[in-house]
Image (tube, rainbow, N blue to C red; front, top):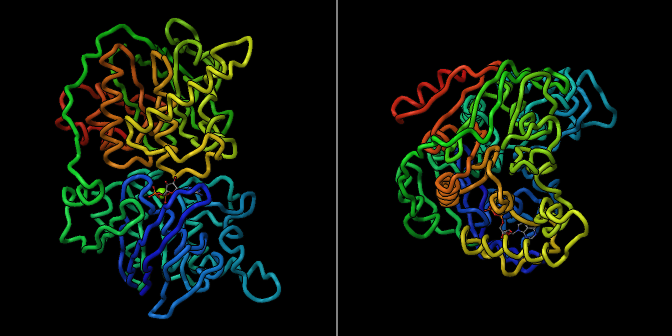
Amino acid sequence: MITLNGIEKTFLNGVKALDGASLALHQGEIHAVLGENGAGKSTLMHVLAGFLRADAGNIAVDGKERRFYGYADALDAGIGMVKQHPLIADGFPVWTACAIGAEGGFFLAPKKSRARVESVCEKWGFSLPLDKDSSSLTVSQRQTVAVVCLLLHGCSVFIFDEVTAVLSLDETKRLFSLFMRLKQGGAGIALISHKLDEALSIADRVTVLRKGKTIASLSATESNGETLNELIFGKGLKGKDWELGVGEGENILSIQNLAVTDAVGLPFLRDVTMGVARGSIVGVAGVRDSGTETLELALTGFLKRDSGIICLNGVEVNGNPLTFRDAGGAYLAADRVGVCLAPNLTLWDNLVIHAHRKNRFFLDKKFLNDWAAAIMNKMKTEWGDDWEKRSFNETALSFSGGQLQRLVLQRELAEDAGLFVLSEPFWGLDAQSCAYLVQRLRSVAAHGGAVLVFSADIDNIIPLCDTIFVLRDGRIVETIHGPMENRKQRLVKAMV
Ligand SMILES: Nc1ncnc2c1ncn2[C@@H]1O[C@H](COP(=O)(O)OP(=O)(O)O)[C@@H](O)[C@H]1O
Ligand SMILES: [Mg+2]
């Protein structure tokens, strides 16, 4: 058993992320760690995994106090962490990426290492393409590699930080069956997730953090969505039921017979024709490699089409993101770190990343400062983020995942755009932020704007969208609109 007691952590920027948090994780249990964005979940898990040192408090493994000076110490104690996008050795055969760091012995013995990886995969039922290049792996496979690494290190406690947020339904199912196997093998699992239902479906125990403190620790059978929401947010959720928009304006975006071939290793898009009307919220769903990503990149100008027409506000967009923006498009890219955000640039830079083009002749510093300040102000008043202590000079990396998600959303929503293309807008958002986002998008549509959402999170898009297009093998195979009944069955059936 592992216990964390009275853990405190204040970051250099003065943010007290942990304020006496505690957690008890047993072997053979799956433990969900819940809390709103910024509650301190990741920080606490980083302390447990040895990535961060606590200012106060203690960690005990099987009753013996341990000090972790780095993650190697935690690994030594059998504790390892799997992140959403695990860092693995790219450009090596997959088995090497699994075995790296866990070779043991003095000499490298490739044959033996590969055999060890293979036997671990066999034992736990992983199907990884062991001899393929590791750079070609999907996120889900990369997470699996990270688990194999930890197993090779002899870990018996696994921490998963919001890993399911980037997985499809199927991948999540597979991951959860792995959790069950690990649990049956006696391992302890800590799972951070924003999806309450999902967490409750697998967890044995639940610990809720709020503002760096442990609010409650209870068994999953004695908790339900409602009580947990109250524990997480401290008050009832102010969700509202929305009427579906009419969406009968003329098309702001029209795509005709769009075809894109596989120049960058993405799947083809074949003969896609669709429109997005002013005043509507439209969804695009599909499993990985169904073409949704290609469509997203093509219509926002990041990919060139082969044939067909993409027209935004009467302007043709073809392979130029700036044309897309100039024609009145805003875009939240799925690639949050890279396309959306420059992690090592300051918050200020990241906030004005598009705004600086509004005046083409010179850099209007005052305008940009006001722009950034307005976004920060909205973060506080609308999203309930207390950013007062934060400075514009901090790098984006010093904000929590959920904070960054809301920040880039707010930055895009601040654009005076006619069409908002949002890829996975619900990623990393807690339930309250999800509810608020839905309100915001409804209001965009109600004011004559249009929203196009790309998402695999069908539970969130089904009630949100007026129309949902389902892609499979690069084609639109189903168009869903009208009543909510049967939407889910139809969607799932069309996707796979
Ligand atoms: N490296 C860091 N530097 C400064 N502040 C940080 C850093 N990491 C997290 N924080 C702050 O600590 C608080 C808790 O963050 P985090 O543990 O990531 O929250 P959660 O995972 O529950 O969403 C947030 O206010 C966040 O901005
Ligand atoms: Mg986090």
